[in-house]
Length: 398
Ligand SMILES: *Cc1c(COP(=O)(O)O)cnc(C)c1O
Image (cartoon, rainbow, N blue to C red; front, side):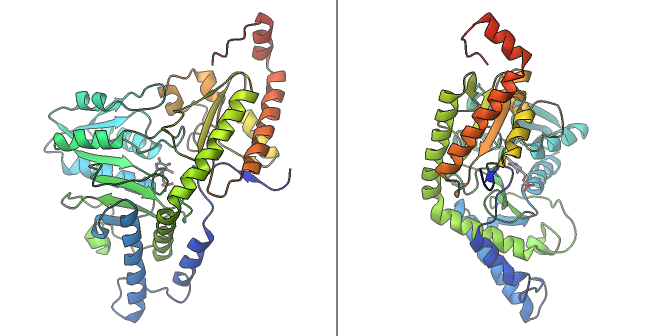
């Protein structure tokens, strides 16, 4: 095997060459501060506004509804904290799903410490939120519902328009963490009744440190960052102009190529899932088989430690992730895999492979071969596996 096979695109992506190209002038000749009065500011302002239009267009929003931030984490923090504190006189109750990203989960924990009550909605075995459960959790004091558009670990796409409809009917604000979905799935904030949406550039072949929050016109948000009058006085700090330009370019390319990318990735995804499930015994797909992101493959391998498999694959130049990148470094199994009902050991034996628009069939096949070998080696060393074979059951229970 030569070179590397990067299958960790849900953690971050390689920048698209056209994105880098579009950004470069704003590091060099066009370094102006958009807030200045002179001519240098004009180009930066114009570039920022073109990017705003591209981001808006990708989700059917208006440019004035897009606010640039430093990424998905800031957008999630801003949406949750500002709605919570800003509506405190109306109520202190927030509804979220049990499988949100840590950017939402840990913000909720902070809000709980500050007197807010959070209801964490269960998901089914595929990671799908039942909109009826959301409806039932609504109280007179509920001010916000936040359910992610698509999950970063298992790729499950949530029933966003149904949840949006319920929120709108009850006059409750609806936020969605769409970091994994932005530019990867067709999003229409108007049709889906979304009030607030978080997006990040680096999950879409754009730069790290650039993101956006969509805020529906008419929704008033207190700033998270106080200072200058940037972003119409709602998000202080000199703009990351190159980052914003990169995000705009990434959005523009995504708009143009989305259908083609989805078709290509879906085919590779399903090929990879089929091969692993057929060729490696005692495996199970985590998440839903069709309601999932086109680039997401997440498999539970019985009788192995995902971390050990990751090391062996790493050695072969195949880069993957166990559970979520954010959970790595801790021994706690992923809250998402536990929420879909996996046992601790099965959660630990799960591996996430995430594809990009550049992933080839050859890479997928090489990766699957490497996985077969790694899993085989680890099982040979596993006393649990030996016991299992002795007992002689053929059940693929995981
Ligand atoms: C990556 C990610 C985030 C955080 O975005 P950053 O831009 O890295 O701060 C939030 N939510 C989800 C679902 C993500 O995948």
